[in-house]
Amino acid sequence: MALVLTGRREHRKWLRDSLMDAYVDFLGASFNRGSGRARRLRLSNQAPDARALRSLQERASGVHADSNESLTRLRLIAPASVVKAAEQLHTADDDRWYAAAEATPVPNEDEWRRLQARQNEARERFINEARHSIRLDRAAAITPYHGPYESPLFDSRS
Image 1 (cartoon, one colour):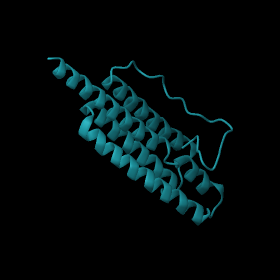
Image 2: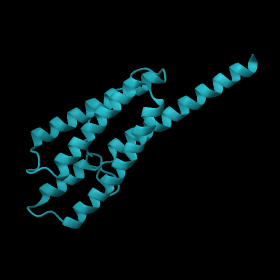
Image 3: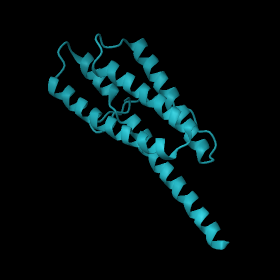
Image 4: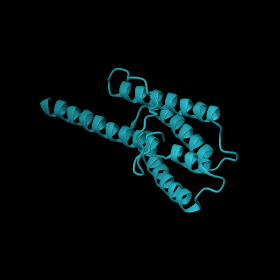
C-alpha cells in the first residue's frame, strides 16, 4: 500500500512540475514576442529599417514556434480550461503582433491600447486558470508597464 501511495505522490509531483514548466514557458513566450518594439520601429519614420524589422520578425517567429510547442504540451497535460485560456492568449498575441508588424496602416494609439488590453485580459485568464489547476489562489491583475526602461534585449512594452 505504501508503494502505491508513493507512486501516486510522485506522479502528482511530476504532473505539477511539468505543468509549471509548461505554464512558465508559454507565458514567457507571450511576453517575449516584441510587438511593441515592432510597432515603434514602423512608426519611427516613413520607411522603417528593413533589416531591423526583419530581425524582429525572425525573433518573433522563433518565439511563436516556442509558444506553439508549449501549447502542444499544455494540450497533452493541462486541464481543458487552461488549454482554452492558452488558445485565447495565443490568438491575442498573434493579433497584436500582426497589427504591430504587418497591418497597414499601423494601428493608432487607441487601437493599440485595445489590443494590449485584450492581450492582458487573456494573460490574466490564462494565469488564473493555470494557478487554479495547481491549487493556488488567483493572481494579482496585470498592469501594463510604461516606464522609462528600454533595452535592445528586453522590450518591457511588448
